[in-house]
Image (cartoon, rainbow, N blue to C red; front, side, top):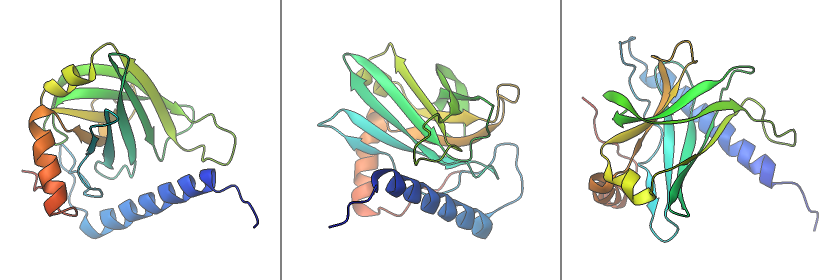
Length: 194
């Protein structure tokens, strides 16, 4: 059997396919520009994994940014690790990444500042147009999920910190049960946003 380097290639292929779906979805369902851009519906609700104390949160493109990605919350020694990767990152910039009170369509005040997204420095087979961030919050996983509601948002730049380009909602203690029920009954349906 011929052995190939598929781990990096597979990850890149998944990101490219995901980005293509977002672009296609954005073209098919685009609307007029609003003060707070609409959420592009491209993924299923956040997945909560109780045995590993980890949550994957899809970061959906807002407006016409086409930036998508994923944030992962993990419990580490009584603290919460937040790791994020976002596509379409512009080289030589830093994009603020934050956890806000509220939702993607109704963003509130800052709950936690995260490490800004920076260009992926991996020079291997992975894409360099990816923004990455890794933050260890001095708050327990349970305490974070007890706050409600919360959303992770990616800002355009530090100078344009009022503009969100991607966002994902954190399944908090009150929404976790709803997410699990929704995922088991209609995996492709996302609740309407008003």
